[in-house]
Structures are given as C-alpha cells and as structure tokens.
Image (cartoon, rainbow, N blue to C red):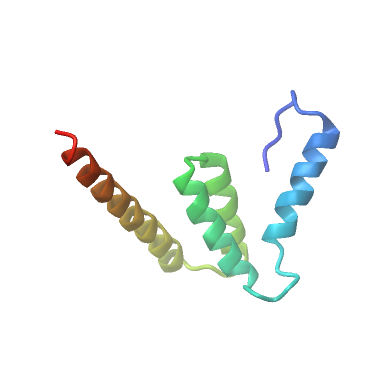
Length: 95
C-alpha cells in the first residue's frame, strides 16, 4: 500500500491492519492467489493504478499466470460493459 505523508503513522497502521485482515488467507476460504486476483480486479474497477500494480505483482508471486491475469482483465471489461449497457437503458427512458 502506498502511503501519503499527510496521514499519521497511526492511521496508516490502522488502514494496513484493516486491509491485511481481509486480504489474508487465515480462514482458508480462498487461496492467496485468488484473493490477490480479486483484489486486482477491484483495484481496476476503482481506478487505483498503484493498487492494481501491487495486487497483480502479489498474484504473480503466488503463482498467477499471464493467462489468469488476462482473464481478470477480461472479466472486469465484461462487467464494466454490462454496467454501461444497463445505465444506457436507464438513460434511454429519459429521452
């Protein structure tokens, strides 16, 4: 996680603890690679380039292949396209 020097060290520690608690695999629900691929997808959706880079690199460290990362990109594009299609329909009713 990149830090902003305007944030207090205490706040940064709290944020890191919060995110680490969700990105860990301590409950064995999802493996670490899957967690990082999901985090990369969400990072793309919220337009956080440093987050995307971080989570893709972490996923690769966990064994994610280029094909798996590309699949994540394709899923994000498909979901985004679907969102835009639905939004366009709602606008059409206002014309």
